[in-house]
Length: 585
Image (cartoon, rainbow, N blue to C red):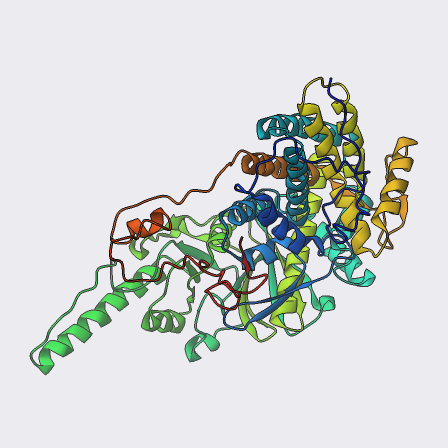
């Protein structure tokens, strides 16, 4: 059996602000057979992790995102930050795509995943400097990942759908630090009530954000809300004269548009005289009349379309008492069809009385100056729409993201149980992985122990963001966990306490998802030994084959050998110049 690596210290003056440097005593031996100046993906991955690390936890700070058009957005949601970053380096894009995929699949934990990836690659870099082969590191990381995930699952506590107190605590944990205490309670109540109203099926829940109000104006609607401003539905004079409420409407769902023009082929018609022009207008009028007749003859009161509705058709329908909603979002369109019982048709001529759905009422309303249509009392399937408000568009959108995070946390808690939060779950998993390393008798034991060290990057970052000394906090955490206090974690003040008693919980599924994505990404990066520019065909192919390939091939453009796109020597030019908008090496 190989000896466990010596513990390192992050008190070293070499790395005073590195959030991924371990706090364990050091091993400063020279590399046995290092990789020299070859391909090194670690700095690129660490740059992304460091960018997001300061947003982690209840004391995480916000990022001001500014796009090329000058639009500013303030957020501390890791997924939102990553989506906005312009990343030039290939490894940076690999890490970003992995974290984004995790966010799409799990719905939470993107920042934690990025922090873990940075820590795992930093630990791997130190092992490679000591002569450990990347394959041995990958094998050790795979073993450690399995052990850590099993430990989290063993420590998880089931939560019942009716346990309101715990579900609200889970939602509060997800929101703590992003708003004040009163708002956190309001978010938790909204999220718990909304997801319970749809039987914990997030597919039947939508969250809408509107400016011009506050969190106290948030409401939960039993039905589907369609933002007619976003869907480009014009409220002209005829539609404006509609009653604000239509009782017991018959609802048609057209998976297309309502226009006399058929197909997507553009055609040009030439006329030689006024009679020809009149004939064309008359043909269009008859086509529109037949279309309107088909919709009305089916007994339709409200028609919801996936594509555009011709202006003249919409006005004619309004005069005959039919409200047309165009360009409904796909999720809203599908929800309306399912919940109302309407059969989806692709053409207006396919509409029949049997294809229509029903609802108790359809109401036109204005929310913060934005027109909307609410369909309530849908008979076939329950659907809940949460309406949140904010003083500005940016605040309203951030409020929507917070509610989404609360809903995700609650759903995962019910399906997979919970573990103590505040970094306690990662410390507990680190102890379990470290114990596993002592039973391995090959060089992968070093990687398993390094994995255990990397897991402590999460509580270390939480402590640093809370302005506490991470060395002291981690020493206290280890001592508490060694003494059997598995619920010892870091509270919002940065102190170590029993987070379970404080009601701080994380969904187990989020932790296991973070562990799986981070380890798989780190292993994939570790197995890369070089970055090659792939050749192709065309006039510029020779330019892509290396700095000497242009000799004599006669291309006229600048190869940029002195510093590529977005990475000019002086850092002042290039398409993606500037940090953090361009992360490259």
